[in-house]
Length: 251
Image (tube, rainbow, N blue to C red; front, side, top):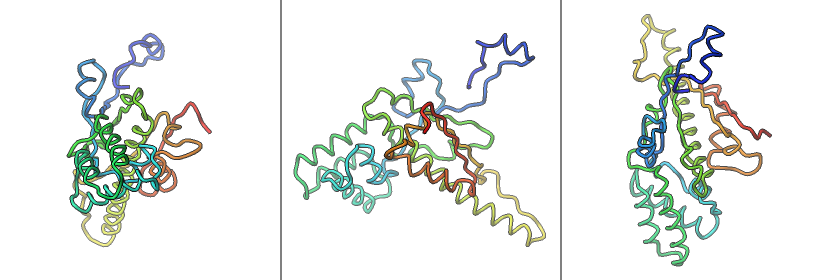
């Protein structure tokens, strides 16, 4: 997609068509960005997420830990405590909070700590995170490439965690943008002079396209992306976000 299809150039010539690439921006998880660049794998920008953007249910689902188990209760308590202390926090902050907990046995703390130590190695988290405005630009195609997780244990859950958060943020952003657009439309009918919304403040409508959709919306069970994607399917039309799902395992 990013580069011209030279392989089928002769076929295109028969139709008087020229092979051209699309103006695509590819984001790769920050921990794999430099590696992709060195290997010549197409990528343009690093992508990262702030750990504080996930709630305890997200972490438990990703770690495949029942939220009502001893480990799940500890994760929930730790995340709640950190949210009360600071707006943004790191994986290291989570680990420190786990270690300082006085209400559970050491083996439970060790098990939870090990999972967050593993999460730190996903190459996904940073203190700032990638701004949503960098992902959605009017008239542009953005690809979020999470193929780097294909060989990692729990790869589906990690990818679903990313997709779920991005989908959730896109939906919220479009909900706010739609209210602004509707307000401006009403305002323009009640005033003599129409006021344009500054270009930099406009939020484009979004087409969210997901490949291997069965990994995020399985026929049975849930993933960290399920709720966000179902919300868009049910309610996305009004705020202006559409969802296209592609899968070789429909049903």
